[in-house]
Length: 635
Image: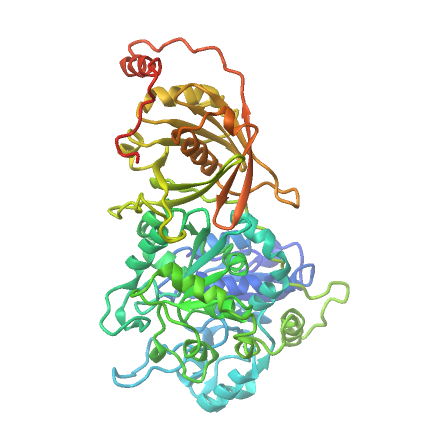
């Protein structure tokens, strides 16, 4: 793919003057290599907004092996897209690229090259390089293999974010040093500007008080965390692929209501292997509650919201450390990095993830022992001009175009948008461990674990994360949309999530009656119709609404309402009456306390029996008996 094959006729082309509306505009070309580099170009696009003297274009070199996703991204940008051959034939006042590769030297315009990560850190041989297997590849973006053509610099301006990069450039490629311009890091500046939005980003990701957000981040290539090559160097020599262990332990060790997990993966993973394939690889973890952050939107917000990042030698991990987030390295191939780079220094400083110990213990230790200034020296090398990249870059761009900056419009970057609300959704079967803390007033501690694949259920006798020797009762819960449909027939609690007025299912009371008929071993069913509430029907026929009190700031409690249903189920099966739970119970998940109102609802008239529904007749008969039906797998 190289931007399509049909040559444009407007706003450039052989007879473009006949068709264009605004004439005499300066032409700015954005050169896209792949989705990764395009994200940095999107960062600086607003620097040309509101200037009617500038016409912007985009093109794709077609040189990157990662071309999937580029057409969609270019369409989203809404700029005229020039085929690569036409781009080479067209005069521009400014050409902006965020990567090397392709025939950049053939473009007719003043070329400015930005970094598409946090500086220049990785070693990567140029496509036409003759580097042998015994010779270290050059540092991408700082070596002659990338910067020079026929002994002369490709770029008119090489944008750097910190003087340490200039020092390495002078050492590696002195011929290109005169083109260097220190202009900060627009990606980092957008992150810094959004730091005050941390609490909002956390709520958008469904992270409530007392919960910890764990972000798994990986760059691309075989020695990354996601790549799984043991040469990645985070574990003992000769160790097997760390990724399967990590994904399984996220579900097995982290209680679903005390931790929120998200994955931020390099676009080259998403588009190199295909989004469907990546989602398939993450399927078990996603059904256990992992949020797969899209490759273009939301990763910076997730980083800001994080309590800990499990990462590797990626820019994302370095950005996390730069803003004071604890990091644990799941892979870190030092040999793939410039040893003088700040990212390499992070690898010599941050703790490593070891499969020998408990994942939860390593995460909690990293968070609890972390000091926000731990990586202060490294953060200072992210940008020498934090918060100023918009001003510096626009000044550079307009100087190269030879026109004054627009006085009426300040140089600004787009703020990071607030992501849509995405609450935790666990569709894998859940093992629920409940401990009664008090009978009067009712107070229960609930710990839930997703059970994925062949992983064993947690010990029904005690919560591995709870006080030593503490006994728990256990039961199973299942989402009605679970893939493991066989678990529904033996689940103690069945949950459905839908709007109260969903015509396919509701009202909640009607669904609840049908569900008890459908799942005869179930003791209680719950219809979650809001972020902090659900309607519950017991096997004895009681219908109640459970509603969590708002947080002190008046916002809804973000704990999964299915937790309250499980707490009520445990209360009832422990021999207590529903009346004893009125008017409220307290449910604890980790350190968070949720005050839940228990409100009896009027019984709707019985629905007429479905013709030929033998299972329904059998279940109705069973409900008429005094003893409730219990799952053979309940404790």
